[in-house]
Image (tube, rainbow, N blue to C red):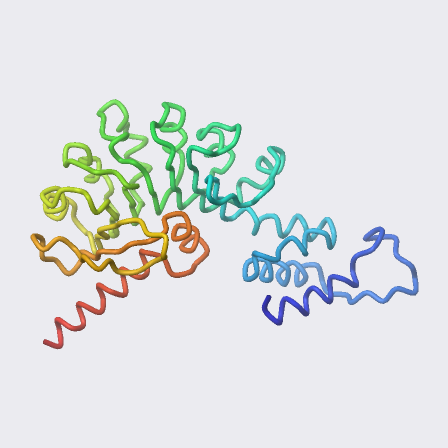
Amino acid sequence: MVEGNSLLLSYTCTTIGPSEHHMDSSTTVPFLPPELERIIFLHAAYTDIKNVSHYLVVAKRVQNWVMGAVFEVMVLHSKRMYPKEFTLDQLKEYGHHVQHLLLSNWAGDLTVAQYLTFCPNIENLALWTGVYSDDTIQAISHLSLKRLSIDITQLSEPDILTPQLISAFANITHLDLANAILMWTQCEALIHFRSLTHLAIFYATETEVLKTILERVEGLKVIIWLSGSISGLGETPEGAPEEVEDIRIVALECSYVKDWEDGARGEEDMWTLSDKIVEARRERSQIS
């Protein structure tokens, strides 16, 4: 825990008592204006999320402030659950704080559409659930997404690509095609991602599909040739396909769930690493 947050815990220990409003008159409690106190606790929660449970027992007002930070990133996967325990009432109350959501096939008792409805402010969505129901497609249509990880082959049918769904794609800049081996006919929906700058595709995809993507999808700055790894994030020894020469193509491997959560929390992920690699290539090409 960072030193500043240790000092905050010392402060909070003096504020815990049988009641916020009924304390022994001999008790000395440091006083801060509520607005400043809220700023301090929120800063501590965002910078030290692993120890946020300490702040939840301070006082009801602090719990209400901090729960927003707890629910900003949700990961519902068999390998990782965060928050570890939450109730349906808490999801209904704090779901509007969720900005980053990863849903897998193991997502509890609620449907995907229910999660998306309870969390209307999602900007970064990873939907690793296989087939998407009509309710799920409808719920996605109401989101204002900037980043999306999804099996795009499920979205390529004409009856699924409604004007509402196409509109929901309009502001997405980062798209991960979620481990799918693609043919171009399965990913023609890419042309509807008008703001797309970063694309990740599975390394086993045919190079002809990669060439077609480069030709048909405008505005791409980075294409990640992606494979899974238990050792963490890094460049793959094999590199990108030799048949396609383009400085925008970066061959990376990562641990999918961890990498997604790292990015959601503002740490280095496949997107930021690929940006660094492409920028370094551009600088070298300008020098030479």
